[in-house]
Image (cartoon, rainbow over all chains, first blue to last red; front, side, top):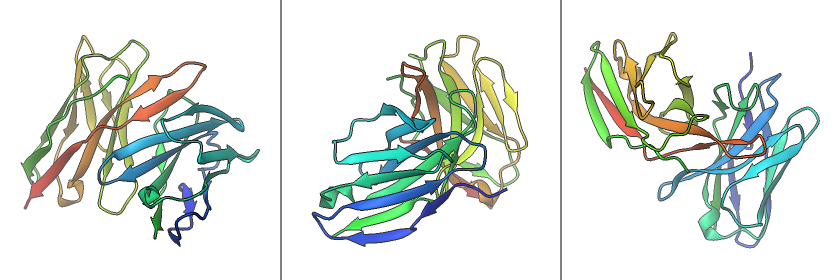
Amino acid sequence: KAGVTQTPRYLIKTRGQQVTLSCSPISGHRSVSWYQQTPGQGLQFLFEYFSETQRNKGNFPGRFSGRQFSNSRSEMNVSTLELGDSALYLCASSLERGRYGYTFGSGTRLTVV
Amino acid sequence: DAKTTQPNSMESNEEEPVHLPCNHSTISGTDYIHWYRQLPSQGPEYVIHGLTSNVNNRMASLAIAEDRKSSTLILHRATLRDAAVYYCILLAYSGAGSYQLTFGKGTKLSVIP
C-alpha cells in the first residue's frame, strides 16, 4: 500500500513569505502529526490532528498552523517565514491514536533565504 | 515530559546481534515505548513498540524491564542496512485524548562489515 506522501519534497522561500506543506496519510489512518527536524534541535513535535481537529500542539509560535481535511489529508502552514524555519518537516500518520506505530513520510526540505 | 536516555553511538559487527539500551526512569503507566530509526535524508522508520510486555516483529525484538524504567531494542543479526540513528521514544498521553512522540538524540549505530 502507498506510504505517507509529502509534497513538495524541496522548497526554497524568501524570508517573510508564507508556505503550505501537504501530507497524505496512509489510507485508513486517521491521526496525522507534524514534526520539525533541524541539526540543532533534532526532531520536535509541531501538532497532531485527528478527525479534523487539532488535538495537541508543540511549543512553536502561532506562525505555525495546520489543518486536517475530512479525508485525513493534512496541510501545515508557516507564515512570515524566518531563516530559522529552514528545516525538514515530517508528517507521520497512525491508524488510531496512542496504541499504534507511526509511519513517517520522507519530509519536505524547506530552505528560507 | 517523560524523557529517554540513550548512548550517543554504538558499533556492531555485521551478522551479530545488537542490543540498544534506553532508560526512561520517569515513564508513566500510560506511556508506550516506541523505537524508530532514521537513515540520512529519510524520514524516521517505525521499528517496534510496546507497553508492558516484550514484543517481537520481523525487524526486531523489544525487551521491557519489569519496572518499565528501561528497555532494550534487539536486532538479531545486524546488516549494513541497519546502520542508522535509532530513537527510543515515549508516546506520552498529553491529555484530552492526545498523544505525541518526544524524540531524544538517539543512538547512532554503525555496522562494521
